[in-house]
Amino acid sequence: MARARFKPARDEQRRATPGSYEAVASWEAFETATDAATSKAAGPRAGPDVPMWVTTDDLPRGVLTRDESVISDVTLKISATGKVSECLVLKPGKYPELDVRTCQLILARGNYRPALDASGQAVESETWHRVRWQQP
Image 1 (cartoon, rainbow, N blue to C red):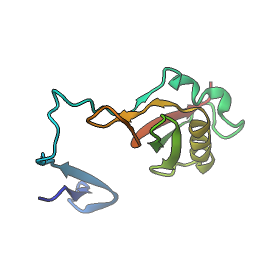
Image 2: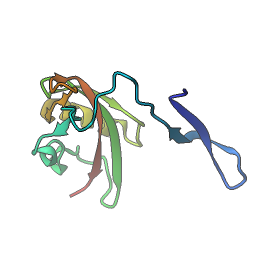
Image 3: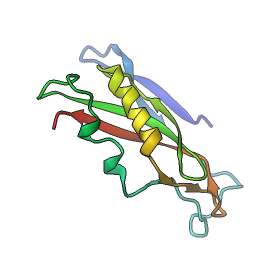
């Protein structure tokens, strides 16, 4: 069985649009799958201090104009101890220095309750995070 299938997004003339896609995904339960009712599996959960990971005080002066805002989307690797161990920018933005700053700050400040496997043991996992940069 195919895990996922991608088709390019189409413009008004039905031409494929570079750089974007539509996704269709399907999953299959294997014999080794654990019953959801008895599983202790859980995804990572961000700590309560998420709003403090990246603040307007962290915005370098002069990068954005007053009415401008920029989004930085990143994927994060979370260790079995809950520490953010890796940060990767999903799509570079207009200001690469803000993408780099996003990862620096989340690596330094981010913390999670780690993901758990079916037996309840902490395991490494991945998640994503979005930061909106704007002038205060």
